[in-house]
Length: 153
Picture 1: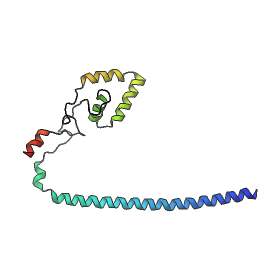
Picture 2: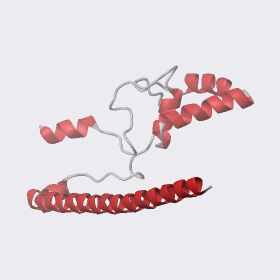
Picture 3: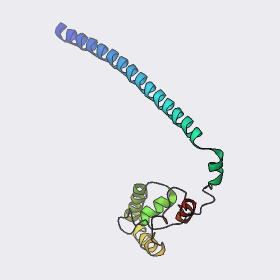
Picture 4: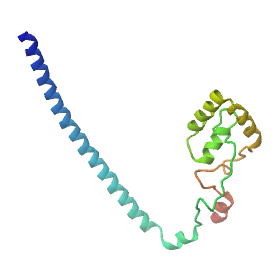
């Protein structure tokens, strides 16, 4: 009986020592994390200061400003990231969400309600295929190549 209680005492002491070591280690990790954050902030500030001296007000005024309301979003089938017809990837790009999320939702609708497959076929026919990469949208802005070429020339 005393042998087991001695073992329990010994194990509890080891556990206390390990918990103290873990606490010290956690503090060290947090300190290192804070140092990394401070270094990243100082690097960002340095780059921002360099960027302010690089641009002058004349160049900034000449550039057109795009906003989500000024650029109309169009729904296209994304053939670059397609699995079947590009409907899910095009819809995900239009909504600005992850393609995998749309595909999982589409699979859920197909398996549990049976409407996903029919809707996919209808949208495959109805949604136009994106012809070029300038037609597809990146976020909420459409790249206008004619404007870029005009500025270069």
